[in-house]
Length: 270
Image (tube, rainbow, N blue to C red; front, side, top):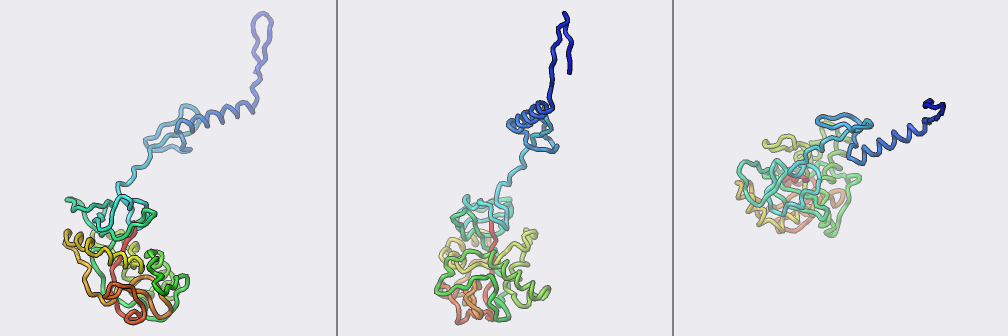
């Protein structure tokens, strides 16, 4: 651009394309610095006065956990707390809220698992002797360190469906019962419940008194004494899986062959 000034003096101002580009980048950077970090328009957003960026309101964060996945919210809970359908937990019964489970485990990563308020029909672990691919085999009480209830469950569900399709539940009934379970108070949790791992069952047993007190407060099914065989999702070998026996110890082999019937009660991650 050329500008002619009075008195015959001429001053030339040249605006190079690179300078324009640099100015635009500076404007964009300034927008970002000011918090305008969205490249698209949004509801209730504010457009940056220069550049094309928008400042958008943050989505509201849920008050509690997301049931069915680890969110770290379990750090706000303790074992035997009542877990409600809104993802919150409390040691007390809260009027107006609906219980869905009782907290039975909190990991060092602040991920938790909670026990369903009811048991399901006694079932066989499987109807065949197969060493499940990608499912760890535990012996000599190694499964005490196995808290991967949902990872184990998914492994067996995926394997059985790949092998048998829609008939998979006939071959691995305990797993499919928990997979298809959904309490009437929250049907959208179907597919998110899991068969407890062996370590999880031991944790439940150690904390049984406190857990039962919470179950009693909300008039739900207690963990009964003398369960002969409570199935876990932890595998021992081709023929056996781990269970919690009536003595309160983990066992496999006698009365824990995969074809035996056992107590089934799901857990859910939160």
